[in-house]
Length: 139
Ligand code: CMP
Image (cartoon, rainbow, N blue to C red; front, top):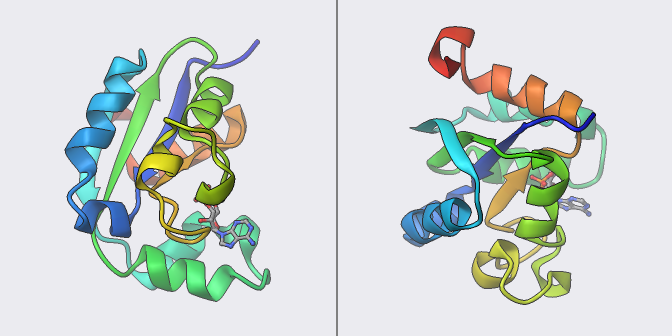
């Protein structure tokens, strides 16, 4: 059965551009409940741990440099079928290919600076949520 939570991050470019409030409003209007949230800045090392499944890929260096370049907002979202629905909701990884009215289409600039992250599986949602939030903070 599909899980009820997903994990998201508003990426540094979107945060810096002042899109955080609009993106969070869109998420809530889309039926997602924010059950944990914080603004943080990742070190390059921590960004590397978060994206460890991409280690060795051509974009890994740029990805971790970018994700540690400024503040992000990390959050756990709750909804039925959260992972799959949220991936549809935010749009394709490349904003140029994202459908109209998706967050990446509206606020993304490029494949790297694509405004927002969404977990790709229930297992990732659990791992990524645990990376940023302790059990106590989630209750
Ligand atoms: P995200 O969903 O956060 O997961 C990994 C990120 O790597 C992805 O969004 C993109 O921002 C970034 N990225 C950069 N280049 C690529 C690429 N060629 N393929 C996939 N992801 C990429």
